[in-house]
Image 1: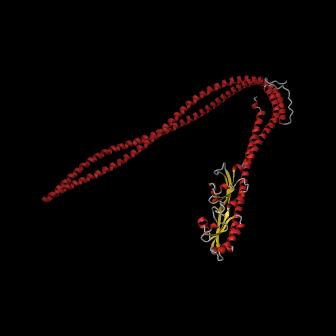
Image 2: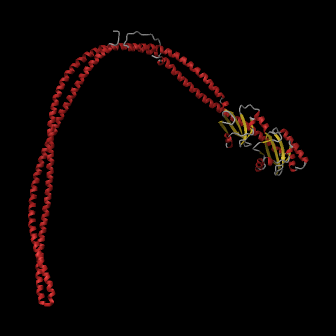
Image 3: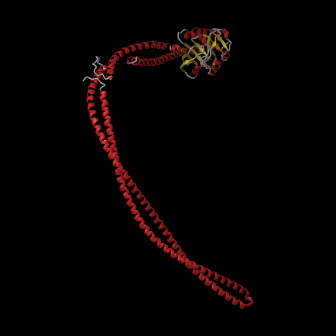
Length: 615
């Protein structure tokens, strides 16, 4: 047997493959789960970071709102706004504003302007006096006016003319005791300092950005991006207060980044913290690397252990293979080999040896039984041959009898069919004679009716003849009376003459009709007598045919009964023939089986001689 087909090769390979697939599957699931967990934790950390910085930026903006609200309540500032031309009041207000600026860490300029936005005084840069806030910051000025001069931040940053750095203006109204707006106060916040204190000096291992709702970057841990614009993927900050953006591409960056964002409550700004996916998945890469190194080592160790264990199993199996080969060669005389194991292999070996011993005993018994079967089968085969010959002779005789009965049945069947057919013909003839008798009867009735009608016609012609005779006499009388009348009766004499001619013609025609009617009457009378005679003849013929039909019906019934009886005898003979043929077939089959049994007994004895057993 080839090495590749042995269990010592197959089992370690299969088990190692299963372990390999299991480890790879578990590792893949573990890496996938850990990567999701790490990414989720990282993004949640982003959200926490963004929330913290949003709160800090919000706090700074609220502090400036509180500060400018406090500054707007200063009497010196209000007096300067009411009296912009009074230098003493202006100086007092500038001094007070400088005091405010010294304690306000993130203010660049603090100043006062009139209600139209023209700067009256500034605590740091006098050059800003008479500069119009409405012209420099029109969006902020209009937004503040529409907001009833409440304190309002500009949405966009600007470059401070004082420091040259990014700044944002906070502006609102100065109101007197009556609540009327008398001027404006502003603070220009130093965003560069805010960026440095809260963002720039922190090691975030990522990028923190603050942008307005237009996407313009106001603060950033990367100072080079301040004043730039967020990618389009951040347009979501316009419609959502907070969230996470996963795996986006930013122009100028290599690879993808993920970010979290949150809006600031004081301003329409958003704080964004972004980090490259490579940094996020750095720990995942280490996990994959550890799995790739440890997994193969574990698989190799498992394979070695399995191979050693399989070898301890296959060794006794090889011994069993040798024993099975000896049995397959018919050698049941070998002695036991020692396979001292208490596990399933030991039980299998003991069962194998017990099977060999029992097989040897069975073969000895089969040899003895096979010899006896061979002798009995030989005797049974000879008896079956004799019985087969006798059965075949009986089947041949019965087959000839069945053939004769079949011919007799065929003759009787033909006679029965012909008698049935004759009976049908007689019935048809009877029906035809009956129909003809009915027709003759109807004809006789019609002739009698014609005879009666001719009698009536004869009477009518007699009446017409009498009428013609009377008319002729009347015409003759009329002629006599016309002759007596002389000339006055000539016209009437002509009419009487014509009437007499008509009467004579009618009388002549009636005589001809009477002669014809008499002639027809005689012929009809003879036809009536002939029809009556024919009816009597047909009535007698109908009775004779009726009797003949009854006799044919009796003959047909008798023939059918004879046919049925012969058919029953024929079927009985046919059944006997069939049974005899089946018996002959069974005898032949038994003879063939006896011969086959004898041959198989001989083959069994020869087959048992293949095994070598201890007698």
